[in-house]
Image (cartoon, rainbow, N blue to C red; front, side, top):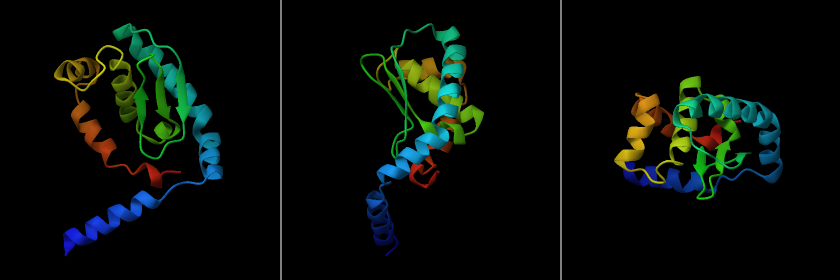
Length: 135
């Protein structure tokens, strides 16, 4: 019975999609602050890694905190400003490290662990956050 309820809850959550105006409002509300935070932290953390990245985008997303493209573009969710500083640092370092290892291999996690030794804990905390419920 409990499994059936969990399945139904997951199905319902997938149907929740913000309207275009809600996405725009979220981006307006957090976008500039997120852009400043991400750029400041990228400069700070990249002093250690020394990677070259192309463009940085701030987006309003409901399923991802960030991504890195094969062209070296870094994408971050504007809701990054709602996380703790340690969680935001982890996300930024995570995407930055994809410029060195474009996968989630042990080499990739070793790169992340050089500057964020408690990345497993932070990753677990962030995975518990439901992006659809954040403003």
